[in-house]
Length: 159
Image (cartoon, rainbow, N blue to C red; front, side):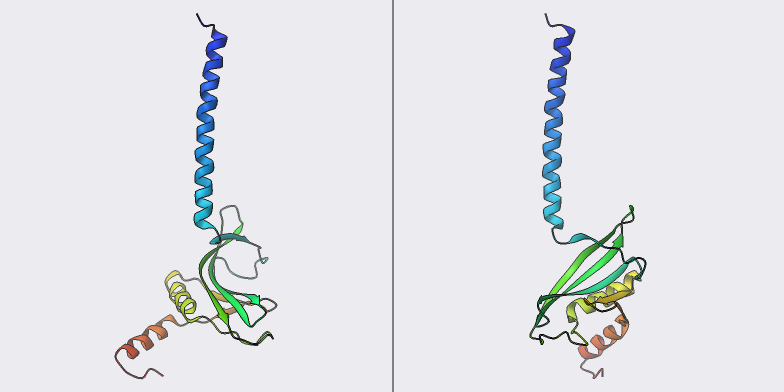
């Protein structure tokens, strides 16, 4: 016959085993989620209210000086806790420029067109962020792009 203490110990052992399984499952799901979002969702430093949140950005980073750089298209959002996060939407590598930082960098057509569409649809401003320079608000006219696309499709000159 088992005593009350032995039954409690058995119950505690059963609970520990179940808790261990739940922790393993939690860790597995956490690793799976991190793998899914790896490189796509990251915390960013606040700019002390310089730029509006939420916003869309074309962020430029050097890969090999300015002869090879990367443009990351991202959406910056504020978490409920107040932290800023960037959700990477797309990335384009651009190569073949000079080693010196140019006054005006090329904008990737694909990401810029998507930024124009997303800005028109969501109502978020689009900023260009180049290291060492102030962020620049981009005035992207999505509707002009759509009109030109329609005229080109019909074979008309849109310039």
